[in-house]
Length: 229
Image (cartoon, rainbow, N blue to C red; front, top):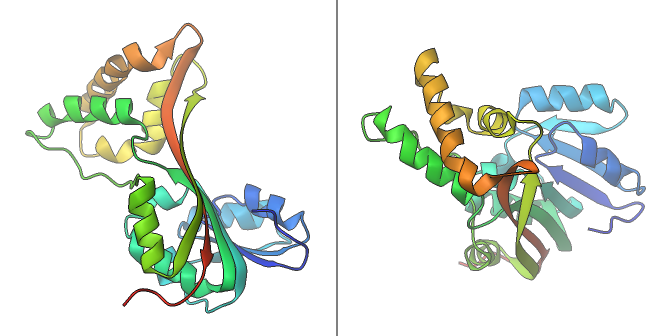
């Protein structure tokens, strides 16, 4: 993103504020935004000298206020991608840039395949709906351009990510995919988790331990004009 001193930057989906603080170190004026009260509370506690706001990304009311909007590992939790892109475009000044990284097409494919093979028998041949959005370059470019954001740089790449400890995959599932298991009783949750972990092992467990099969989409777009009619 290459933030400059004096620029006004929005950290979209700021979480606990770690990267918000990194942006602030450049001398830019940065505002962190997140829809989670817990995350915003933690960010305010961690970095009391920075500004954070609790707000839904798609409902942002900013108008031509920011030189850049930054987002890391947050956009794939926002299923209303077109509305979010529109809100980002409105928040940017003309010529402002949108720099982001999110899960891309094929992200955690092995993990999702295991979930979708195991859970139907626990949910009468259905499973809870997905809560994540992993677009391709072409798909996301179309969404951005429809909102007046011209895609200048896009990369879709594999990023296998180590998971800590021998319980690494189970812990990851409990942290990031808990909603697939919350409708089951405690004994069913344990069995389902164990089966999912076992199914992922051939592809995602090596002599070095567990890893998640992340694929990341990294983009830089520029606000060039009005959205398509």
